[in-house]
Length: 57
Image (cartoon, rainbow, N blue to C red; front, side, top):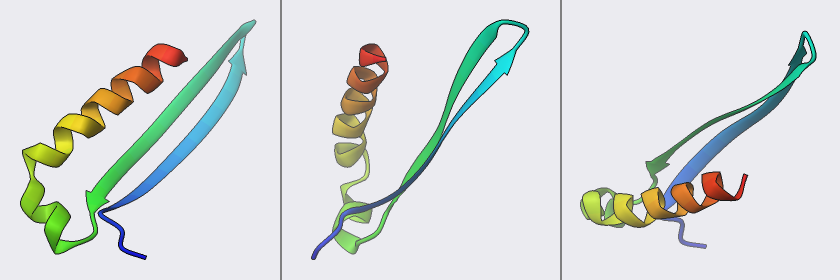
């Protein structure tokens, strides 16, 4: 299989004085030469998808 990106994420929840907090920590990096040479071209769709994801939460 040919992967362009390698991604990792961590999801967490906590409860403090009646407030539930949800945190997301995520990062990705290019895992192939093709993805590394794409630069800003690969960042634009990733930013768009992240915005839609956050809007859905």
